[in-house]
Amino acid sequence: MPDVIKVTRAVLPPIEEYIDEIAPMWESHWITNMGKKHAQLEKQLTEYLGVQRVSLMTNGHLALELALQAMKLKGEVITTPFTFASTTHAIVRNNLTPVFCDIEDDFYTIDTKKMESLVTDKTCAILPVHVYGNLCDVGEIERIARKYELKVLYDAAHAFGETYNGTGVGNYGDASVFSFHATKVFNTIEGGAVCFADEAFGKLLYHLKNFGISSEDVVDGVGANAKMSEFQAAMGICNLRHLDETLAGRRNVHERYMANLGNVKGLKLPQTQAGVLPNYAYFPILCDEAELGVSRNEIYNSLKKQGIYTRKYFYPLTSRFDCYHGKYDAYETPVALHVSKRVLTLPIYDTLALADVDRICKLILDMTA
Ligand SMILES: *Cc1c(COP(=O)(O)O)cnc(C)c1O
Image (cartoon, rainbow, N blue to C red):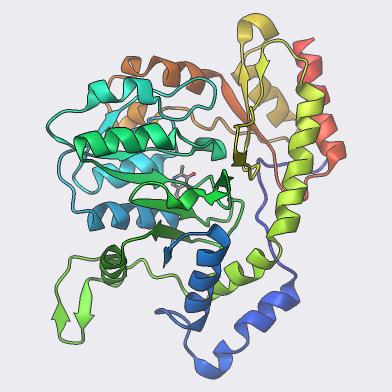
């Protein structure tokens, strides 16, 4: 029985490095609440991501929720249903109304050609997702946002470290949110960040992530607790040191999949985007049953029987979640619906052996032959 292969595997630094990083806390006893590690990681990420400002959060979801809250929005937010639960929940939990825009079928990002017709006098913001690390049409989104005076918050949870024509992707829109969850390209165990330029917005985020407390006697905001702990920040400092190796490992896996699966009719593989430096966060394949003779679900189930756990990211669409039953019509986003029924993300992480990639590909090829 071969070892089980999951869709991803959390990156961990050499244990000695982590111990060295956390050891000073046994002297200081300062283990959370914006300590030294927190300050250091914020500074390092500002440089690494090439952005103006970074506010660390305890996870990516609260980063989204608090960024939306700090924008002081009311009304409708144009967004994509082809994403992780977090994106849509963050809108709804801010008492805002998601308005779902379809995706385009090359990169699965929000389709800006279908966006303007969704703008109403209630629209206040756009929340697009750089899904799988594919960059949204940032230029067109900026044009639409300016024309209708809308805020733009990017869910960049999949796009850590990517650049577009040399510019860090965290620079687009009014703010961008990254996730540093264990399953992401860069992790702080749990964690996330908001990137932005406006200093006043940063002060508000700081206030909101610390319960809305202004001073010992003054609490003047309905905040949350979204502070990143020193242990999380220390993990980030260690993992950041090894990021080049992580990315190189992922790239090798990506290239092996491309070489092995490149000529299968009915399988659509990830495409490269002009000007984008990718991070190989995911390896989504689109399965056309008519051409392959086998469905996405059959591939998923057969691989599972062999101990290979792929994921149907993103199925179902968030607009089809049980908790939103009856509220949204998925037929209004037909491309998203089509893709969600056919997409499968294959295992990819830095230490996945190429022999295992070959084995996964052979199983798929044998099924589709
Ligand atoms: C992971 C993820 C999030 C949430 O981040 P957490 O750090 O897990 O809270 C949000 N949006 C997308 C698209 C994600 O993949």
